[in-house]
Image (cartoon, rainbow, N blue to C red; front, side):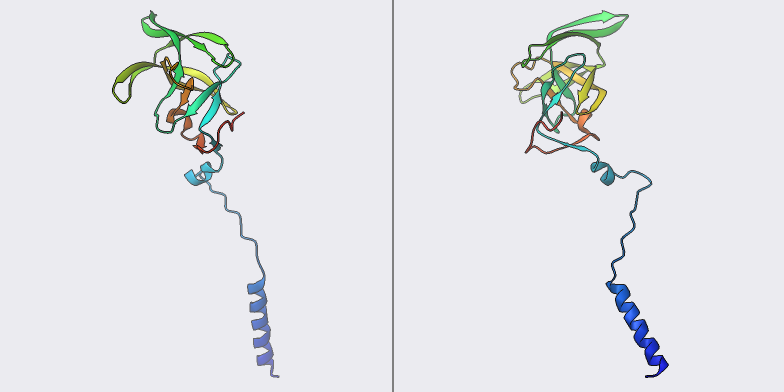
Length: 175
């Protein structure tokens, strides 16, 4: 066998063996967080989740509603007043499950119109401290008497966007 043929055979064997070896693919880390990469870090939550309103100790059962722009909270004894030239509201939150009650006074951020099937309702929008899952933050809530609703709180897109992906086949995934 000539040395040219030996060289050719060795090169072919090297190519074949090289093609058969599996080399690990390098891990690519994006320099800027993309929407795709942020999705992997979001919580998957269900149709109903607990939400806390400090200083209250017991959570409210909240309906998760991706169709609602704003979140809503069950409030009783809503009274409007003025403080230092600003419009304020006082209200009572009562957890139906535990009976725990808390009286709040909040400055009104603005009023929003809530459209329902046959009527439009004007509600005050206030900023509340909330604990949702492991995160504590402030969020806007419209105040309304929700005694005719099964759930005392409604979590809308103002809280969900960038925080959670909703899977309606599950509930109570947050602790």
